Image 1: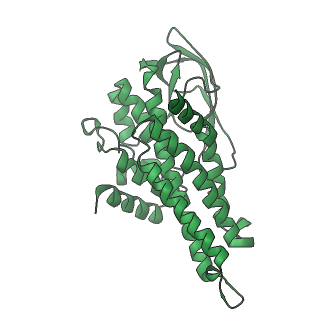
Image 2: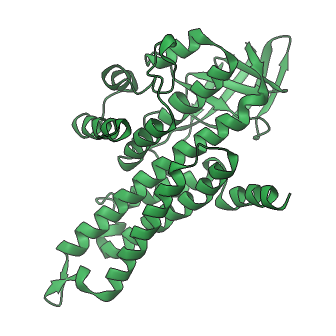
Image 3: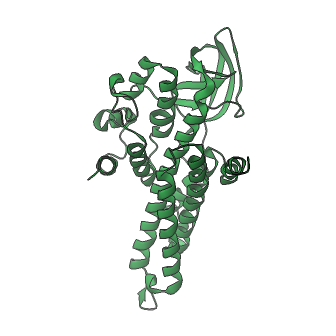
Length: 312
């Protein structure tokens, strides 16, 4: 068994046994927080394949752990900035972090090393790595407000800064790579969620009976499930290549987003009435798919990036 497969199996078993384990325990027991951190700074020194394997299992379980923003995007930003002490803090799980993109509605100014302003929406993290005025700086927010969102499995916060000391880590040229690696991790999460939706739909189609036989024997249901299988496997291929460069990231950002939305919607349709109840988890996957579709921009935004690349 290859390392990504082994790692995915370990994460799946851990989440099944300890679904409510805090991030610090997860980092300590599995080493997930330092997956992409170089070994000399206390991490595992793994790459995109291992990252995707972990992200897929987290997406499958709708885990609220801050893997995407902390172990992927923040780590990549700190590696580019050479902040080795902060990398070590992320690797052992003692600190969480989030990367704030440039020009993303963040009303920020940096003067004499002091950061002031508000970031309206960002995945939760204790340390903010902010791209502002062409620089990358690290700062601890003076205030934060957690939103109650449709998808409660990925907390979003408003961060505020008021003459907050900001540590300069370097220029802002690393943002494109940080964003694209985040898209790659999100695409893998989406594949995990879509795969779980397919499994739930298949299980229900085998078990639910109408007119004396399982509904999975009806041609309409067979076609839906076959189409979902094609979507999921195609999305897995797109996610597997997403970390190569910005073109593959944009492909995955577009395709995997729409595949997850389709899988989550069809899962509810195949379940029928039970699929829209609070007691069944199907609605939670639809909510995650819907919120994921806005995290790095909708599919149309990714396709616009592709069009600019293809058409010059």
